[in-house]
Image (tube, rainbow, N blue to C red):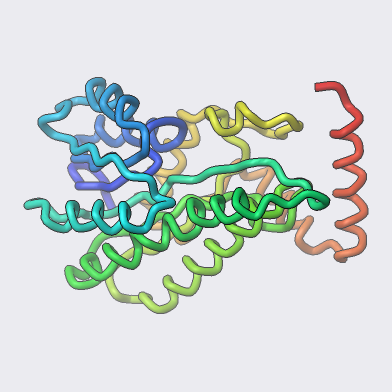
Length: 260
């Protein structure tokens, strides 16, 4: 599958991986529908892309608000040019303390990381299925592989997303639409810049976006990187629960005691 010249929706497009995907796809003569909360960042991005605002569309939308998602999808479906695919990339992180759970913050992470992706799939996947062509790519995380220290809502929301995409892929098997999951490790973005803990094997956003585009063109069902970190986590998944919990608890203790 070649992405050159395709019409593609990118959510979470105002910064990080989403913005870099927009830059690289625009260089491939794609027509982009760029969606995020921060209009000024979207407009700045579009002004830098080949074709500018005359070619690319901006939609301001908070994906944690179902009504806004539905309205955005209606606008997309009314466009004269149908979508060829969507990269559902919007996501949010945040700290977590088991002894002082903030349910509102936890719900917000699920609204963005899970429901904010599910809403677009529910509205727009039927359009692709009717045409029997296109792709749906959802950005998850390697943090979904196992529970991570101080990351319960983030790991849980991404794990839920993994199972959703896997199940939808089965339901849409041989229907002409590629359903793929994107699982990056630590990527240097404004979201990870806020983290106050070690982030091994950090990648810059430019090669990360290239890997995603290459994976989509190869029609991979799961795009995950960096490869060494993926292999390490695959081994970690095999550890007994007691050993894994003990190791992660020790890691958390080291992070807490080490100076930032």
